[in-house]
Every structure is written in C-alpha cells, then in structure tokens.
Length: 129
Image (tube, rainbow, N blue to C red; front, side, top):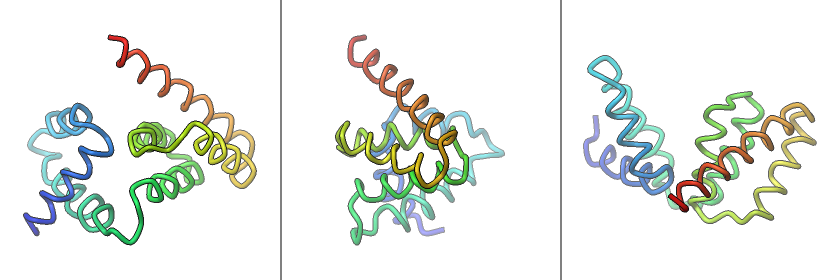
C-alpha cells in the first residue's frame, strides 16, 4: 500500500463527499472492512481522483453517467451529492440527468431525478439545521 497516495486519496474523498460521510464509512467498516476502505482511498480516490488531468467537476459528471448506466443508484446518490459539493450548477445537473434519461432509458432517468430530489432536500435540511 502506498500510504502517501492513500492519504491524498482520503483528502479528496473528504472534499468531494464530506467529512461526515467518510468518517461514517471508516467507522462502519469495522476490522473486516477497514482494508477495503484503504483500497478505496488509495485506488479510487488516490490513483484516480487526484489525477489533475480532469477536474473534480468533470469526474463527477463521468461518475453520474456511469453509475446511472450501471444501475448503481445508491452510489449515484452519493456522487450526486458530491457533484453539488464540486460546484456543478442546477442547470448542469439537470442537463446531465436528461442526458442519462436519453441514453440509459427513461426509467433510469426517472430514478435519477427521484434520487436528485431526495439528495437536494437532505442538503437543504442540513443547511437549515
């Protein structure tokens, strides 16, 4: 394991998903899942997300499309929140979801819009609370 890459990966993971999400993932991993969290930090977030060839916004756009196409709706919600945190506008997010509906099918688009509505409401509640 590359501890430096793991550390950089965890930092960008926190930037995109938030400290509370990452803290919860690490805490809930337990002894069995802890090594997998290290792999996520090093491989997914360190190797991929710290590469500055693409911006965090571009990576969010890619992830939303890929996750929708794969039907990974829980992760879609996580990364929809990350896309907002990365600065994507409502107009950009709406355009992404419409394109998902066109290319992945209307049922996938309906589900993505449903998840987007839930995530946006949760984030508004967090701001208010």
